[in-house]
Image (cartoon, rainbow, N blue to C red; front, side, top):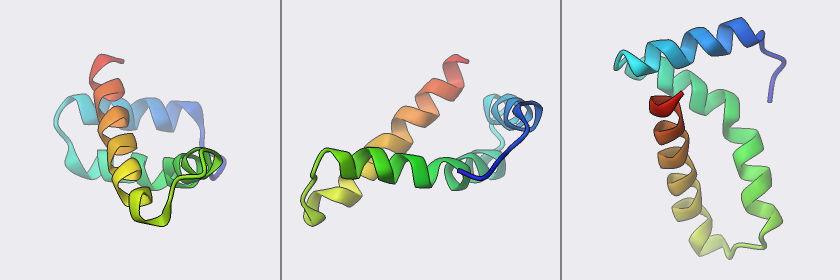
Length: 67
């Protein structure tokens, strides 16, 4: 994940909570490398990787709404 100021991430999260789809897209871009690395650590088959990534995005969205 690129170095990102925690204030910037906080602002993105708050924007997401206000239904800003662009802010959520930026969060996904920021966290994609980390999510892919975690998924890869579980030796997921290539056919299941995209499904796991989609589930990770749903979990990120859920976490943002609870923040």
